[in-house]
Length: 157
Image 1 (cartoon, helix red, strand yellow):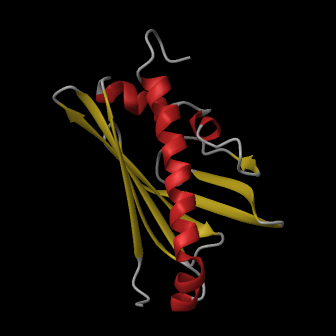
Image 2: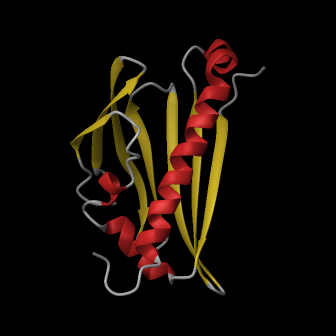
């Protein structure tokens, strides 16, 4: 088992145009809307925008243990993508790229995460499968919420 970064990707196809998908992510409450109800999480600071330098701070629980996650937006191209990196938290490293692409029938959201678990190979051996399951569940939820808001008729509300 290697200590190479781990990779997770989840894609969502939508019948709405990419401008509508991007507008959802620009909502001031988008980050809060995407937090699953089963996760014990307290948002301490919402990102002010999607632009480089915007930060989010969230207290999450790993079992009974509270952990602070701080993330900073490090890349941004309006209408196309933004990237955040974990500056503090439970992972040895975490980079999340959100890409919005037009398709012939609407748009596509591609979430790509490159991460390393703490404790190197030992962390991967004992926590890798659990983290993967948690990411699958988290992004299934986030994509359901995104689809509901983006494909809704009328203005985003």
